[in-house]
Amino acid sequence: MLKQRLRVALQKPVSIYRKNKSRFLVVGLLAVAAGCSTGDDKLPILGQREAITKTVNGKSVTDSVYHTIPDFKFVSQYGDTVTAKNLAGKIYVADFFFTTCPTICPKMKVQLKRVYEKFKGNPDVALLSHTINPDHDSVAVLKEFADNLGVTGKQWLFVTGDREKIYDIGQNSYMVTAQQDSSAPGGVVHSGAFILVDKDKHIRGIYDGTTEKGVDNLMNDMDRLLAEYKK
Image (tube, rainbow, N blue to C red; front, side, top):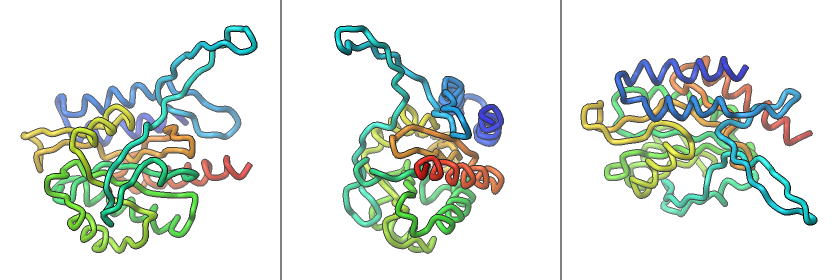
């Protein structure tokens, strides 16, 4: 299952951004191979693990610390501050886009709207879309964009902020491409991936957000992940 998801996630972004434009995505997804299955029918926890040695009751104990999404501070389409606290107790899907994207973003938003409609009103689910063109995508622009998609409320947040911080969290935390590239359509390069994050801020899946099949897999895994917490 893990190898199949990796293969699907890798195929589309690499075909979209040839040559070296997808290097961060490829590196990030290869790092997923270090993810470890949690057993039973649970989704694996993706990303590299770090061995931490500590002293417990006078004995040296080594634990594995899984890759987690760090805290962040962005601004939503409503003009309010969004941090990791806004997503506490929720699983969520993250992606990267920009409102004037001429290539894959329209496909991605059509597919993410399917996720939004399926889980609309579920207090345990959130969506978080990061613009990678904050110079253009102001709060007002993001609000208009969300309105045009038919998105209401705060379950699906479109966030903007410092460009470098957005690129950093995309590449180093979510393990996907997010960078400027003057040769790319729209002047920026980003992954078409949707990233599934659990309530502990661990990445549990990376999916092709440009295809119906990829998003079907995402929604199935969201159901599986929610079922883990019910148990």
